[in-house]
Image (cartoon, rainbow, N blue to C red; front, side, top):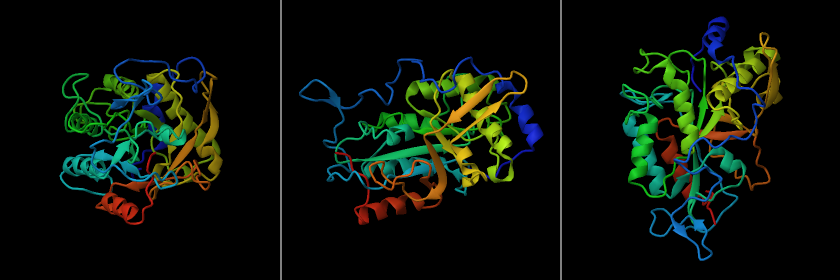
Length: 343
């Protein structure tokens, strides 16, 4: 979420490069795009069971050893810009982001993707420890940038910080959900669409999206240019979402986008269009259909467990990375024994 917006005509023009979608159903299961990291559906962890299967282990890990609690709450952390000289509503400094990672790690949390939460797939979380979902909204260059050349990741961008953290923290995997814009203002177009935005090149946009998918992160929809959906007709709402899904499919053909984050946390007048709809390109006559498994709110605290009978995937609540909100929320979960703990 952010307070950025752009005139509709200008935004649609900026997104014209995404109009050519790969042929076929936009909701096919993603094809294998590389072997550099195991997907969330594969067994990846730290030890081997007696039966020869790979399994996660919390032995000697900080924050582990709790009794299972499958009905506890799960923190879904919401980030925007990673950088700047001081924290603000939509900005988290590099130092604060690093401190957040340390905080959740020492408390016994391990990252998973939103799709894993939906599927009750907690194999990346050792027994006695807890899942956490990191969600990055808006696709700003500060989240993922290159230094001078394609593939050379800026160590002070969100992704660069994440990779460096994983080197010294066992069990910290490439799991996180990126809710992207592909036609936003100020470089919020697949992590930077011009040199004036942290030196990023337009040609690098698809490479970054592909890299995230290959490394085990999740791709998520956030509309074309961060439209406030309650202001628009049903037709425009569906166009905003469908063209965003088209952009993701153009970068990673066949990728099934399962998650959607509401811009500003505001619902369209027809709420159902936030998770299901379609739009027909007037030029190609191609119809793009979207059907998300979850919709993320902008706030509301830690979300319910998928084992909780009251769990509603169309209303996933989140914790904004503002001030000390993350630390205070984790402290409350511990104080009330209300955190999800894997078995």
